[in-house]
Image 1 (cartoon, rainbow, N blue to C red):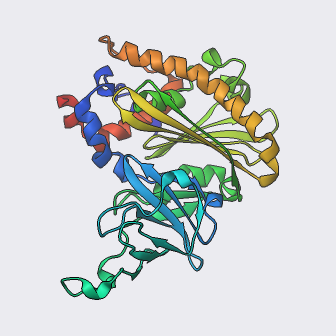
Image 2: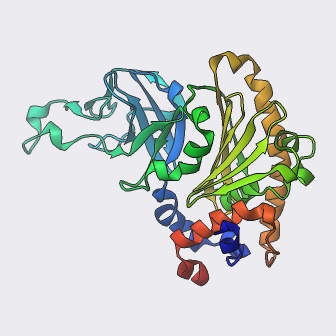
Length: 348
């Protein structure tokens, strides 16, 4: 069965869905919490270190015990909720985690090693009752993936197309070469839709992204339940692979093994945070800033479009007809409708 034929019966999301406070408040539990999120490159977290960051307002602590794989926890001491590490500190070499408030000490595996003055608690104190709150955590494709809910979809299912199509490219060891963060004045769904929108590339990016992707007649598509793929012949040989993943993640693979990770994290109804991370072999680091500048050039072209769309969507727009080159948007929006619930979208 042609997957595009099935998508044709599903219209684009209505314009007000990009400006609905009710939908935005439900997206985390019904949508974002179903998925895994790539939070860091594994090279950022060598054994015997930790890294504090945040995801959707939640404080996250990544750690890498000397005798095991990376772990993820809520970055809060179970005693009074104080953060165990400061996100501004970046990667910190450590063998244990000590709360600066009351001195509770944890191993990098999240086990409580000691509570200060344990003999003086008013009730019997059992260290085993106070581990750090753990989150699902896996390493795949040189990325550390974390889920906020205890029962996300299997990571293998979320990345099925990536595993099938990128193959050996996915498994190549990589380090973080460059990173950039920027706020966009648009709802995250507009930015995500735009990066899935292959209809605009030749028109809006004739001298940038279009040169990487090549003629539209060579576009090859694959869709799965959670992911989309646009594959195009690359001028240097091989294929340039662009994956769109729920909820708001994009993985771009070059034939030489370079990988760009682009995400659009919600901030409020009219703003999102665009995170760009570039990964590759260590010897590519001298050219990383030039590569980042190239990517930021076409992302700047997109910024003007998505911020204009945010305004247009608030003016009573009824979205126009879908084009064949917009099928990746239709697939992701169909998944969004399914997981959010048509009844919620219809009543918002």
